[in-house]
Length: 416
Image (cartoon, rainbow, N blue to C red; front, side, top):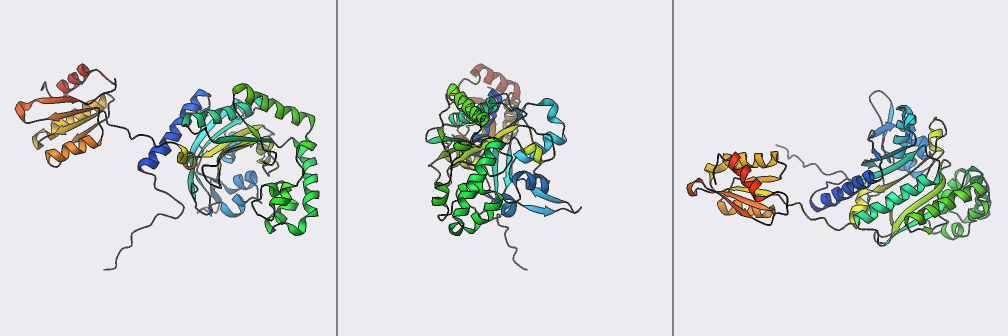
């Protein structure tokens, strides 16, 4: 008989368990708490969309669309893509589901996203993101609220120290037109020294050269003209309002005039929370204002601003959460008490208490297994005259011992 080969985990994916899972859950729980504080509504969107949703929103020339998307043809011949990010799907839902009636609308979501890229520390081909968006609000106050929300999340997670908010303005359409012309002229003068990727970007999107990591491009990009000389009065006032709002809320920030978003639908605020605790890939949360996105999808011109963060990368920074202890461990010292232990455990669970029944192995193994659950109370059912013995192990105010005895008495027919 041929040997059956054991399946392997697909490269770039992960099985999240134990301490890693507790870190992961800790990030999501903190995100949920902060969502409620800021009165954002939870939304869930499909894992896959029509490919054009991402191609048109993220940009045909970006690496995500050109190299990283998981795209496939379904049995009906439609081209579908596993989501590489959340914003495009939320924008599509805003249009197709008629959410314009709720504008301005504040939304959060989380879940797996997919990109075919080289796996490395904190980066996977299936990974997880948290995402926050405000759609339909053109005011700088929306940018401030989202940034304050992100800052509070990092504080809640206990990882704000060593994380810096880098902030920039991308201006309005008038600003970007003037700046783009100046960038094009600058890079044209250095055409012979640019990398092949930057040459490809020069005609389509010269701003993306500023973000190039190629050593050949860095000196040229560093000498490129900045945006401030081209800021319109309106764009300058918008950025000033954002920075004043951040100062008012106590959010610390630093200006990074080289921080860009290459796509034309981005406007005004761009930002990244960065740290040196994750090596070269130091961004833990990033976003910006995308006033032109919904228009690029065929909808009316609609302002929007949002951010996303990788759960895995945040989880790498948080302290390892303690394993949750069990409220009550029930030990049946001998087999004749197995059903009583199961009945008692069920009674505790109905009362909202976590409980485990230990009914297999030797009495010592049952006690050892119970102790490994780190219970607040451990209850043993013994052969000694059918007595139920209760041993308290430092319960932290979840219920009074008298309540415990009432549950035991009711579930065991008065034994104690």
